[in-house]
Length: 273
Image (cartoon, rainbow, N blue to C red; front, side, top):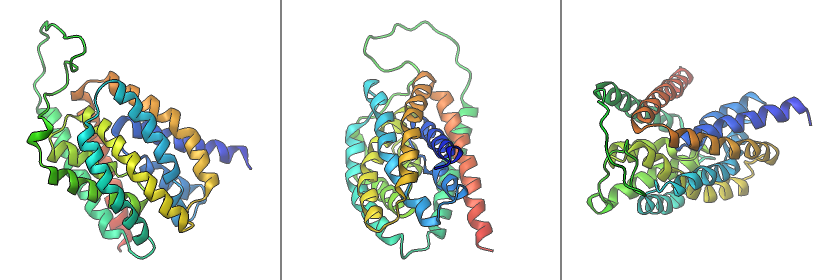
């Protein structure tokens, strides 16, 4: 096996791991086009990303768990419901053209990205004030969060179902829908949304990976090399997010999702003509 090829696949995995740890996405936004560029077939590029999603998501979630940022009720509810839809999405991947689904996903990403960016730009500059910190309490830059009881369980289910279907159909982690859903519909602070998303992403990836493996869509050479890069990348990405402020993370998330929406949506529109 060519050394440059190995290094290239591991590097793609490392970069996708950073995105996973920072923004709570599965990283397939990089690995799928990356594998296509390196010679994988379209269906291999979709299926071979999934084995790397699980260890990357777990690695990032572990760091957020120690910081107490995971909303377990939201994560387990949306994750368990979405896992079933991930199986259905994987089965549909052999029969459904995902073109219009990607356009809808790009539209949602664009809305979420612009919303987060505008919210950052409208935020007045804070005047430093000495505030006593409570040991073991929430971070001072973290927005107050409503209790789970004030949120709609139906919203958890809808977000999980949509994200799980997307995860199975396109071989992505599902965070592309989870993060906008958590931040926009549930009004969850960005750091909690990222942390919670990674748990659900890990849950989606197991049935989706099993289904794609059964259908013969996974090239295990690509998958194992990606995994070798994803795990250290996810740990590094989580550290970046934990050290940053909620305000800065919201801005970076807004810019990232806006650019991603333009790239994905533009590519899908060009493919239609």
